[in-house]
Image 1 (cartoon, one colour):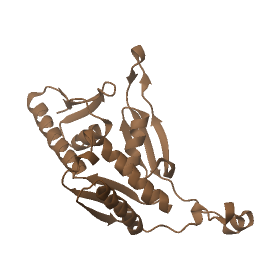
Image 2 (cartoon, helix red, strand yellow; image 1 turned 120 degrees about the horizontal axis):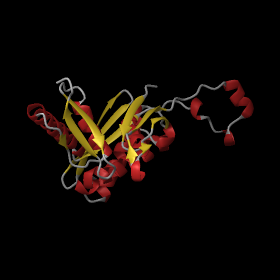
Image 3 (cartoon, one colour; image 1 turned 135 degrees about the horizontal axis):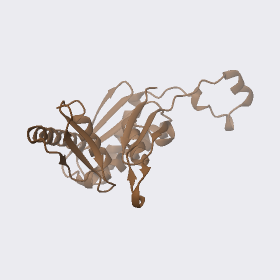
Image 4 (cartoon, one colour; image 1 turned 60 degrees about the vertical axis):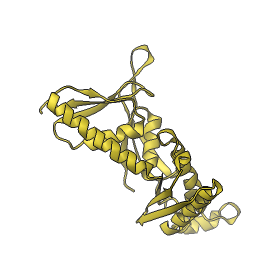
Length: 238
């Protein structure tokens, strides 16, 4: 399984972002902490946390030994369980989200795309803000619940499931990307660094990723959550 490497303000933030990118629950991932923030003056932390994570691979076990030992109440081990088709996980997630919208009295459509083990589900309709929340906090909870009732309930350990509601994630990513590019252009023209407003770790990652390949500028985060900010500066060799 391919590893992903994530950097954030704290180890917990980095783990959360890694799980979101992989689209799995914590028990279905292998996570290694590569670097932790270091203690500074007055109890403040310096630096960022870096973790690497992957979807936990199923271990191949000897079937003869398994038969001799047996499973609890004759249950099959996870390694011997057949892979759950991504379309089955998609259908379970779709059914849950449709029911959630109906229970809230909302008219919404649930659209999905499946690309290998990647499942993207979009809930579209009017008046969906209650399922998005401030800075997407409620959306994160909706996504976690959807994973529980689809991936975990079906015993799926392979798919990566992501949920968007009302186009929030797409709009947020696009808006932050445009804003980051404008800031980068301003910094290049003026030569003066810009410190952005405080952002959560997910939004900071969008800014860092957007500007990672932009020649002439560099970014880094500074400060402590919830006031941690991204600083955009002109590259030394620009």
